[in-house]
Length: 568
Image (tube, rainbow, N blue to C red; front, side, top):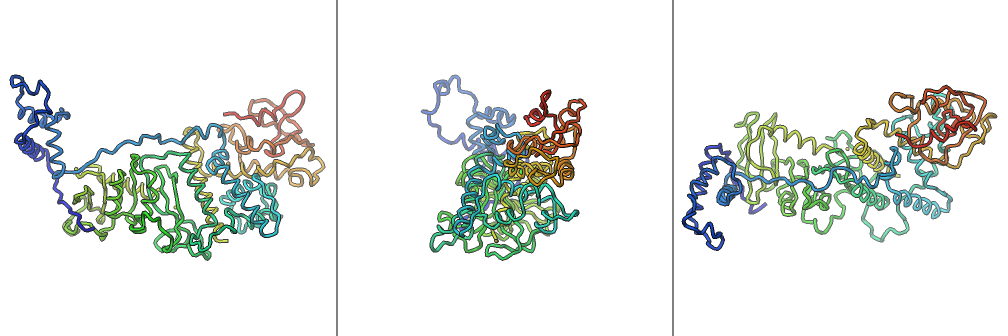
């Protein structure tokens, strides 16, 4: 960075600060005053106060901040003493845009809202189109796609050696909830023809390596930004989706916990909500024309933060991205930014205190002519920090600030199938963040939320299965040959926690997909779930075909209807 001038740093104590202010005020007294700027009262010689006494009193008391001369005195000192901006508040609320979630009652509702109906429709259309282009008939429906995604989430926390084992008939591998949701061959068929973009419209000479999922990426970014404002502090970092197969955009970094996979550039808020992301396509990817003069790390930050320029946000990043040029660019765009930086970056001052002359807790700093401040702080080893809004005034919270920066910059983690499922996990985490923000009193863990989404999506495939009799155990019935095992499985997925939930079945299953719930009658009699929650003894023959719980359904009372109505 040619032309950058770094001023040396020296902290002033109160006496030195007062003395410097008095000197600056005395210099201001020698300047000619423009009488046109004075009021009639100030022009009156009889009422003119002793200006030097006023300045001295204001400096010593530090209480009359609005006095014009004192303000000018401290503005003059700012270039020589310190540089510190008042960080503006973010005008928008930190909460989600709740008007979009007024009708959401279950975890599945929140997930589907974040995923977006347009995204689902496009996947269904493109998958059917791709099958037609291959002279095959897929006839994929939205409910089937959601059930397919639900099975994927289920496999995430219920591990078996192979996905085919979920449909195994062996007793030790049997998973009835997956068997009831979708046949194995249908699952394989959907996986084979899953598509998000039309292959026939690939432009000639296309260099975009993620063309197949580009509409999916764009749609998710629009949804993420629309549904949630985010906190004032935002963090730019990388995230890795594990992948060990063959791909031209697979990255390898032996220093990371996940050494091989797809690299995503992400900007997230303090709660872990990803506001925007992009897939790194390798060193040959085409950069935006307006950012071509910047390095890779600089381009990533500028591209992800462009929508937040001049909007009272504070951007944090680590030393992979930080440069003097980047901080200057963001300052010109009225955007506050801060990050750790590598000591060998171009444009940094070379006259900092050497490590051997510093003990733990010591620090040094320099300020550029563009008010970019460079800190060096000695902890177990030297830590370097670059900022365009921090001041140089010493603070006892310096160590806390550094630890907070570390936390903010660490808030984030066929070949494209793995990438597609990895992006679905981002949708899931974002929906969980929104759910927790809207329902702060609902202490639902991430696993419980995932189970709710998984089971809520899987019952979407049961909308057309209407079972009226299971007494004979025929194949036409819903869970027939394994009726008792199915019932036990439903209860195992959502174990009874009556003190907390009142019902043994989660709201995602109980209230989701109304077309899948039908009363069925058999010879067995068990306690009614609804009556039990009211402390009433009742043992009906009827049960719900989807929930797997016994409910009264007769001319005297209809617990089946009450059970499937929303209640807090």
